[in-house]
Length: 189
Image 1 (cartoon, rainbow, N blue to C red):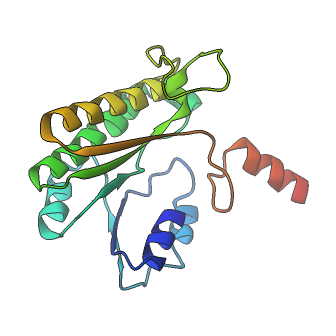
Image 2 (tube, rainbow, N blue to C red; image 1 turned 120 degrees about the vertical axis):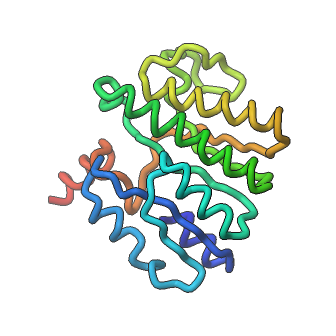
């Protein structure tokens, strides 16, 4: 929601795709969009990125210059018991978006990866040049797979790719199950 707000402030038109899954209360996610939901430059599509047909409908109907892919099934611990769900959303969903970029001539793609790709790397600080061949969770493996798929689409179809390896994202409107959110909430209560 922060990125959408900033891009709208910069007068960009945004098409936001979100399935509002139940990983945490969907009402919290919906509330995060309250400042922009009625903005003329904001279009919300309640949609799962696994729905390739609907993704293609959106990409074919709109003039899209860049795809910023923040959608994912998040969380290391839950991935341990739901590996197939994580693989579907984080790998197949990423492929669906890259395929749409390829098919509709979108040449810029930003991918939100994760620090989980570093696995049990003991070297500190981490570097983008570190070996990331040994993730230690299904979540980390799916994000590493996403990076590899992005590279492949860059190589084959000349799509400019930018991958961010995000560490714990915190601040206003962060995910409520994150430790920083929980600690802060308990301190304030």
